[in-house]
Image 1 (cartoon, helix red, strand yellow):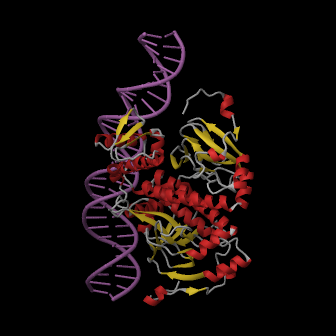
Image 2 (cartoon, each protein chain N blue to C red):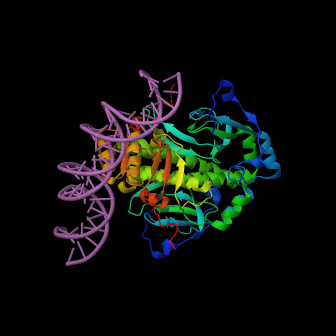
Image 3 (cartoon, rainbow over the protein chains, first blue to last red):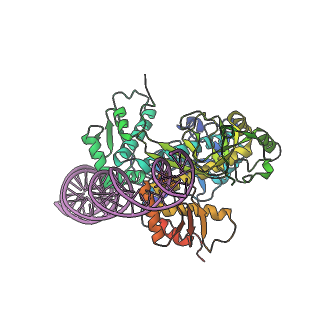
Length: 256
Length: 256
DNA sequence: CGTCGGCTTGATTGTGCTCAACCCGGGTGG
DNA sequence: CCACCCGGGTTGAGCACAATCAAGCCGACG
């Protein structure tokens, strides 16, 4: 990504429909996946793109949120904070994931851009109207929400019962799978990618402190499960081996 | 509830439509809340009631689940287990809550009756057909799923960041609110109810051990926040005082 | 070159886990 | 009727894992 200085004006910039939906990279995974013809054209008309810089807050918990959106590129986080500062991340929003809740005026959680993020936004009234009339949108939204609920419940197991080492291994494994899905090449030779999260964000996601995150990453490196180049770039020689460290049932996959 | 000895035959009994939907206690809170006329009549026709004894497993994670259902009375739990036996509860299903996922053949998690439970069941094919054609059902299902997702994310904060004492206080507060909602009398004189969960189930819900649960309950008793009669019956003299122990933002409510 | 933020590493502490004994109440069988 | 057992719950002692406190590293940037 090209890094550029951000002016006030650019931060507020909102470009309307600068990409046609048919060229959209998340066309078949996002909330619009099942829409065609008139519906897609309507979405095309009411959508607008907006870029957020890494670190920028997209929505504040409890504040009004006048739009819903799909993540087009980048990574955003969903989190909540207690008065004394303890923070827990409750969702990681990757491309095609959906932000906002139809029929609710305020955001339930803080939404923050972890990397630079491009959103495809829809004004809430227009989108709500579509939800009320379009089975394609509603069914897709239901499906995505059920998937998120399953993911949240998986995460509850991690938070409630896994050890620090298992937590780190689980996070790395999830990111690995995400990256294998993106790069269709074979993964037998190992996988490498950049961590989209800082140590602090990882800690908030996993219910740990940054020190513990750092120590466990060092331990996994020492044990040969991962290799690091700089702080952010990870290389995983054998993903299956790392998966053994997650505590999860691993035999669910290949047993031939 | 009347307690009766259960024979094999009764355990397997399935009574069809022994209550009309219009008399149903969860009529306006369940998945059918928005249905009327023909749709309600159709639901009435395809529904069947089934009772499960406390402790009975309603569905096994990974196994086929041929129905979806609403909890009519009683409490069921949703949980997952790791190979080595560590268990995490991921949902507490109270009257009007929904079991099963349209469009998926297998259960994602274990569903177990915590108390005696009455379900209002729908065969999956018939119900899926309704989801495909009825906006009323789909919208209500979407709304309920979004609510569950919010609840799951709240629970993630508890699991990841709260202390043992805060966890116990939070659970008791949630049960208190549920009971205040049921009994419309005023709560200023305190609230009393029976815990629907064993110490072990509480531990699995909160990501703790039974010993820690027991110790923290004793501590809250010692400090005067709760009173116990036997192991199960709890009396909460001042719910607001207990809520202070949860770590949650408490001033969100009345500020007049 | 100095500073600053993100990260790592070390020393120590403390919360909640483990292991173990015991309590309590209800059900059963002698 | 009482003795016994059994499951659920409580309490205690010691321990371990992750949190806390603290120092220092590294790379980017001014």
